[in-house]
Length: 179
Image (cartoon, rainbow, N blue to C red):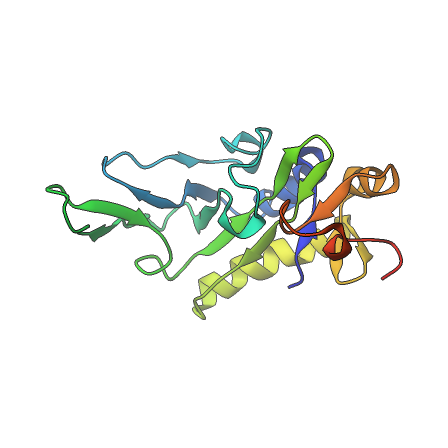
């Protein structure tokens, strides 16, 4: 699936449509030294959805492991050299029946980073989750070049905002309507 550009408001109908057919859990990915797992039962409740992007590059910004509610998320234990306590990682290595959602977001008010839904796994549940989101993104967003773009994101593009994969990239790599 191509990447997408969306504001939080653009994503709300996507979440609503997917969640009307499935009971999902969104679990913040990454590594931590605490046992706490941060999960949400609705896309609209995601901790980072309306907050500034956690990174100036879409691929390193906050991401969520998306699973069906009946599939428990398994933290993967990892030992970091020099640390006494093992860390835990929330990722697809221990959760193959999942997809990963990067929702993108604003790095600055005039810089919108892209999002995407993907999976490194080829299990039936993983591919089904990925397809469910892809279908709704295609239904609710317009295609501009290689990207699907939400309505608010398209207005931002038209008003001169940067829609980009990285705020550090030259503007030549930004999405434009000329593609």
